[in-house]
Amino acid sequence: MSPKTVATITEQVRLCEQATLAFKAYHEAKGMVSAEDLERLRLKAEFHYGAINDYLLRCRQGTQEDSH
Image (cartoon, rainbow, N blue to C red; front, top):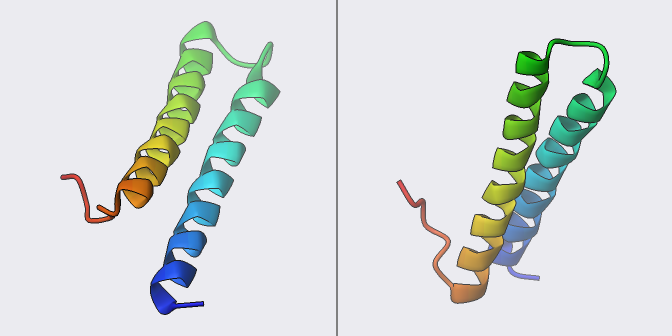
């Protein structure tokens, strides 16, 4: 496996772990925090999943450079 492939897979795993932890925090907070805090957690989780989608799309297109 090429170093670029390993780096890509490593980044995908990192992003998936972040998204999973964010959604776990959101679901565990239901009924425990204010509606405002719950919405903040939901938005954070959705942001992480959006980042995964963007990253995977760029990987498939062969354009992995930063989008900022």
